[in-house]
Length: 225
Image (cartoon, rainbow, N blue to C red; front, side):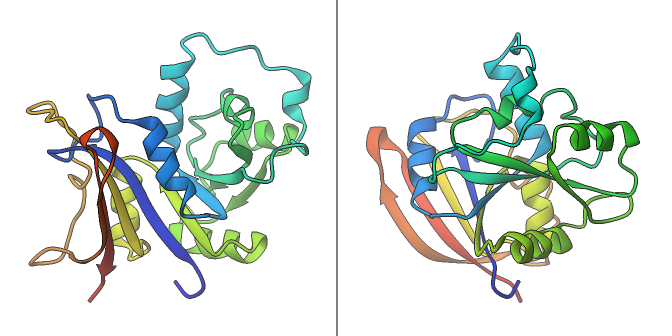
């Protein structure tokens, strides 16, 4: 997309799994910070899983959670979350409180439940309808780039969203932090849902670096043909 750079950033095992191992979160976000992204595109399922993992018993929503945060650090950025089904209803305030999240922009479709739209309106979340049954990712990225002036967007997402972005030609670079662990037969491969062209999707090496504790950081540029 003209004027927008999208970097897919993931932590995986040596055999490509996104789950069933403990990634080095500190190192993951240290690398992410170096991209100087204007926004982070977060998968709704990834966000929900993270909330349930770190908050088995979420804190109570308070009156302050209905107000857009104004005093966040200049170093935190907005999060964009495609959530046309409204699976984060009743949970978004946990993310809004996160110190590295300036606020949340929710992407919806015409099929989004009206109760979820009301939930967002009452809490003053920016939200946009882009698509009929599902979020049109290309239009959504173009919209937020134009509306908020975003030039670089990183992803913090799982298999489904990342593969959709790749299939639609919306990823410019792929950043992978590889952990020195093999998950084996229960692995969930990062690219398992990708319908790639015959011969596979071609990549060009941009960077490779051995990191602390035997981790490896790889960066590739996607070569769309």
